Image (cartoon, rainbow, N blue to C red):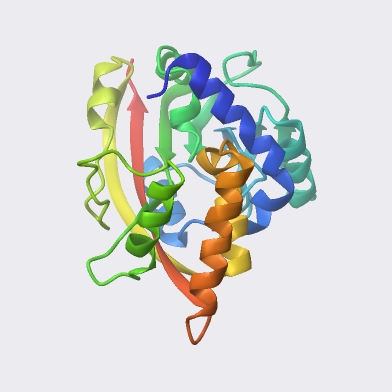
Length: 265
């Protein structure tokens, strides 16, 4: 976990990419939402709280399953994009940080899609527990780049470019593999606020041409924070390398770890 100042600075970068984020980021597998609903036992009409909703990518599937959702999104541009995307659904988007928000009721589920790690690690479990009804659940997951053993070699080859621009991986960094991602069971249990109900992993694949892959990278905090010359060199290499492929495309594999926990007490 990055120090507080660095974490908050990087978290704030996403709003600058709001126009791209909604279209460039992938949706999550339907199976993840089906399992979340089945595991928690939430019923249509239940009131859910989403923390860090972004433009509503994870909101839409749950709203379409009949849930009432309050979304907290600190980025004004991302919150505006979410309101547009979710118009006509039973969703209220509030422009605020979870840490600053003052609740007026309780919720059956608090969930965070690729945003839990941006929250204050000293208070996030306590804050979630405070706003959950008796027997309520917390759920969070990420969308992480994973590399299958038979995956696209593009990413291994591209590491030389990251090294050249000073953004290489630290020596000894493990290669993330599908179904082999670490989970956060220990942090859930050590919070003293929740008991783990389920931890499940999912993987899926997306296909990109150079333009769509560059758009995707432009929504990641680490790439947004790069110097302009670093991005320009990296993106130029991506265009050149994909132009040399017959179909001009790459395959990117994703992994997600769904954590579901029940509030204690």
